[in-house]
Amino acid sequence: MIEINKEKLGAIYSKDSTTFRVFAPERKKIDLFLTDDYRKVRKKKIHMKKLDSGIFEATVNGDYDNYFYSYLVENKWEVTDPYCKACSINSIMSAVVDLKSTDPVGFRQSKRAINKEEDAIIYELDVKDFTAFKSSKVKYRGKYLGLAEKDTNNNGIKTSLSHLKELGVTHVQILPIYDFITTDERTSKFFNDDNYNRGYDPELYFVPEGSYSSNPEDPKNRIIEIKEMIKAIHDSGMNVIMDVVFNHTFKLKDSNFEILAPKYYHRVDENGNFTNGSGVGNEFSSDSEMGRKLIVECIKFWAKEYMIDGFRFDLMALIDIDTIEIIIKELKKINPNIIIYGEPWMAFESPLPKEKQVLPFNQQGKNFAIFNGEFRDAIKGDNDGYRKGYIQGNYKLKQKVESGIAGSIEYDKDRMGFCKDANETINYFNCHDNLILNDKLLISLDDEREIKDITKLAMGIIMFSFGKPFLYEGNEFMNTKNKVSNSYNSPLSINAIDWNLKEKNYDLFVYTKELIATRKKLSVFKMTDAYKIKENLKFLSFLDDSMIGYTIKSDLKVYLIIINASRDDKALNLLQLKIHLGYNEINIKQIFSKSGVEERNLYDADILIDKLSVNVYEIGVGNGL
Image 1: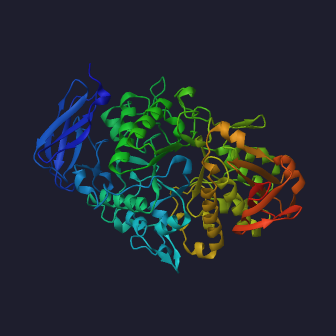
Image 2 (image 1 turned 180 degrees about the vertical axis):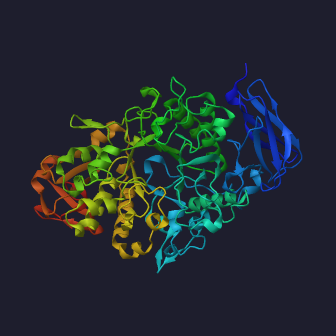
Image 3 (image 1 turned 90 degrees about the horizontal axis):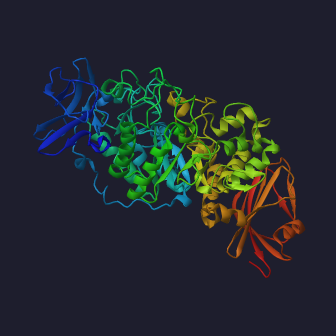
């Protein structure tokens, strides 16, 4: 019996010959088009033999490196190869490439940073957004190479890759960098206002996006330059996480999937109609044998060929849990420190059984994380509306915030989360979707003058919570999207990072950098085991609802964290703190305050807590620290 999911597909290259293999079980005739220039009208046509497995195959002798190819299906449709590793500009034809010739000098030998999962501090960015504006001061604005440039600055203030290194994040999550279809890849069109898309319109999953390369006409150029970018991030001590969109395809009836294998790669209902759990007209059938094969092989390919360190899954609920578990098992063989997480939701109903959907609670104990929407909304309110969260003064949400701080584990009867362990939660207040935090605060606050202090409050909450903290590009210096929420295809004037804002709000950047450094210093946040968290984390019960306080024991040290979301300064009663800790004598040293890192010893009977502040104290018991 043929095990179809073990068959090799795509263009299998060697210098002596190339074999082309494509899965099309219901098709009777497929021919291979082959040419040295995709623009030529006349192309070499080669008959492909259909095997019992439903795979069509043809082998050509000779070195076909940098040749273009496509499949002519039953003399009606010409399509690209879903398994191709390279393509022409704008995905017109697939391309054969010798991948060994695409490694930049030192790429395979470079040592990727070993940032373990429990140490992860994730920063989400878009290649084009991050350096497109002139204020980035990079040579290759909006390109892979722009993000690879080192020692860039704007008026002496670091930008781009140098900024990320200075900030201290451990993982850079990059919005889609596989080939997507609605952006014109021609360099002349790159900065046109109507030529922007974030990449949630997938076309060729194994191929890097061409618009981010300096020469999209050359099939190898995008491969070489994306590797240059990844190497530069690795060399700077950070890891790379790739955003992947396997829940749907942009094209449907005219897609290469649908023309090659009708109604196989997309889910259909009992009447044969395409289902729409993604909200964009279709959903990819991850639970079909060959659909699962494509996803698993694609993820493994990026992890091996491009040395990707983690994957973020868009609308992960539509990827069946069995496929996710296979992916995790295979990826851990490649890199034991690899990180997997995604969105535990979908747009509309799906025929995928509920127990197979990646929803909160379904992820428990399976070695991947999901975005914590409940914690997000408790912190700052709804995504795009006027509803307030805890940081804007809705103190009824205190226990929900505390639940998030505890890693959304089942902490106690009042703080019941969805996680078995804290490594299963991504803690954030916004990502690329919806209003950026600055814009959310602009529409929901009564007093705009509080924005910077409240931004600091939000930063402090996620940084001093158990789980993986996650920031979106520009959060650390109050970047804005001009109140546009769903900006996936908005122009660069809305989406691009204005590096002048870093200079304007440099104090917020420094504060965020020191928050990150303090989190790293307090090794207690490496703790992910639910039992250990419950044993060592204790909330202060005697504070009013505008304040959250908790202690964390670590070996011989105790850390006290106080969050004051009130518009008033508050006093922390030292006697009540001693009763909470169970000691007659304590010594207190403040190591982080509203102004950032600040070490000072405190001797007062009461401790003054500044309004709208996050404070960290190191407590010694008995005869000193």
